[in-house]
Length: 87
View 1 (spheres, one colour):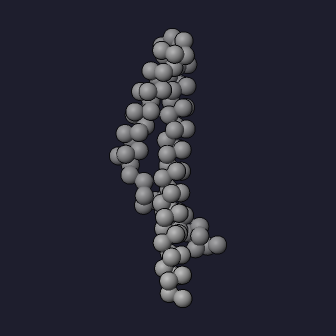
View 2 (cartoon, one colour; view 1 turned 60 degrees about the vertical axis):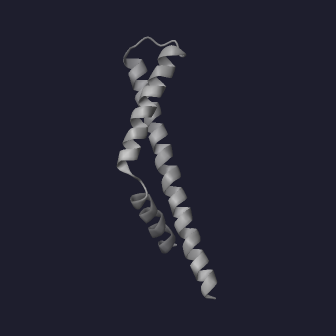
View 3 (cartoon, one colour; view 1 turned 180 degrees about the horizontal axis):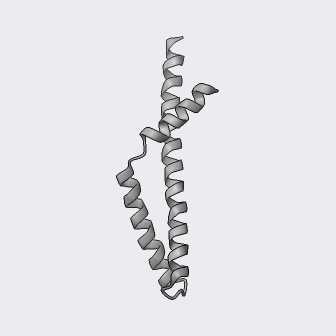
């Protein structure tokens, strides 16, 4: 179990590129703000900004989780494959 958690933590640290994350955050913020402004019927106000920032934070958090967990599964699969091939 300790190895499992250590591998999970290591995958989240190594596989997430901060520049890519920032790019997705900016793109998400612009797109979400535009959609809320145009289709949501919001006036440009503090409520629009707050909702856009919250939705972008959720988007970035989801991206981090998906990329980190995907990298973890890849690493875990490769280690398991190596162990299986040794036997």
